[in-house]
Image (cartoon, rainbow, N blue to C red; front, side, top):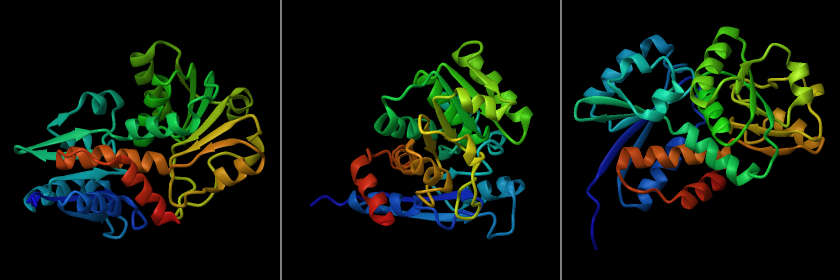
Length: 285
């Protein structure tokens, strides 16, 4: 019997991440492949830090010989100036969720875009995508917006609590996908009344941040609704949408498929996506 002598030390930097399923997904897949795989949470809320601690956290991870780090809210954009190289996808999106330490360099990747894309194709592959409303223009929002436009959404209206952030994301998208494909929204009710679908990329709906990103009165049965929050798997938005008959997509697939790609970046080994998906669902059973 061949023994895999590889060992991986990885971690996740983010705020309020104690409920994350990511460590278990990575370690379970590592076990299945015979890899010594240790995955740690670096929760800046619990450590009473904020994103200004990123330089120190990155340096500490390098000194302790981490293989790499996943990055989540609110650090996906703040981390970019601290990196040596970016993958083409991370550069185009303007957000990083995976950092690999290799040959003395910090290399940033984005696996969120692929993760959302795979989930969307599986769960909502046949929906109308003429006009879509997206809530949120942060790091995850940038990746999801790229995925939506690459999947043929004709017009994406982006709403964010910071209008300037929505405008900057729309401008970046239009550079990549063509003029007028994306716009910063200013009238949510009007945009929702004309939309085929709604995607929430804000943290609203997480266990630690309950609530809905839009008034429920703006939902209607003809809409499809997608979510990237996965803890809980059924957010208030999805519950309200399902109650009136909307087609929905939960955040589970994105969580799994971004982890599949990150596992491959850390380990250099192909992950068994179905095995990781099955394990994710077993944790939520």
